[in-house]
Image (cartoon, rainbow, N blue to C red; front, side, top):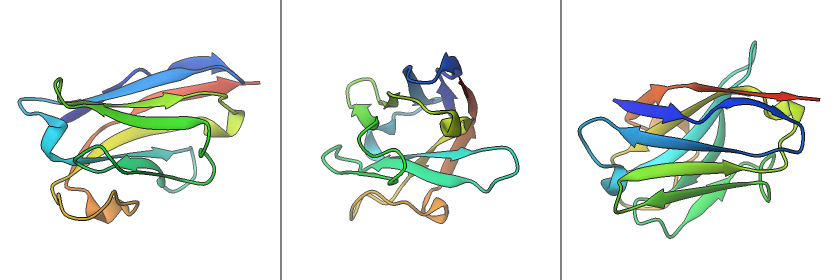
Length: 124
């Protein structure tokens, strides 16, 4: 079971940091991805990091503003979101990928475990 936290209400231009942890296990042996889903829209990829933490990939819409990272010792992952825009408003989900081969993956179907979302609301 994954748990994402850190969401909230922020003004446009502000920052939030989301965290993801797993109950009873460490995320250190998994690739981690962040996805988001806005009301009335499909879930979309945001960012992903491979199990070793050395490779990241971002959606074009967040590139340069968001940064995904992981803390190997704590077994957690984070998503630092800066310069937030109204269009970033969504429920954000973290997911874990058991496949340790290859790079981080953007397809939701690649992920084996999902957490409950944390809501991010950006006001104008």
